[in-house]
Length: 275
Ligand code: RRO
Image (cartoon, rainbow, N blue to C red; front, side):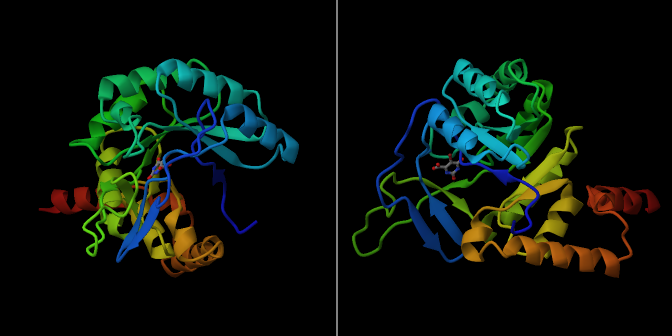
């Protein structure tokens, strides 16, 4: 109702999970570090909740995580039977969980995506970790496995220390950094992935304002996700961004925002050809 095109759930696993003990989130000068620890009610409880809402037309994407191919398959199969679910996001990238080992290995990524691809006809989006040497190898593996889109990026592995005690602030020591600090990293990831795959990219990381969205589109994104921005601003962020985007497109005489997808790549090519 705030103007978002769709909603992505918190990542859901097979079993209920209470998550890490507090503190699980800490603010920094330029973003937020979290180590929630994948808290969720488990797939069965989650599906019961969805059914009780009676909102079949709602644009809901469900994020899932598993520790094995088989767990991902079971989750995808169960969600495929729920009309409210319009797409599945594979979380293989939480930076302080062993699941990130999936998203740090191209071969394992391809196998997991392939397994889920065979379990569902729903659109399949794969969320990648920036905590790798070359994110394009993982993106290509996800595409080969049958992903319909790439989501870049999950949070950047980080630590905050309390200088009075010398101890890490988060109970889990490590967490994932989100917010404005990671936007240039996300833009670089989207830019590189755009050159590597032929499927759409959903950009995410540090979006607070409409200008950030335009930047993601120029780099190669076809859509964006906003998480930390909702904490920093509030749900009005969606309406404000939509208005800003429309004004920008009008000012630039751009008829369709799709014309911006990956435009920076084209501009660079033209500049090189002129030389
Ligand atoms: O729950 C978390 O701690 C968490 C997840 Br699942 C994720 O994908 N990324 C993140 O920063 N935190």
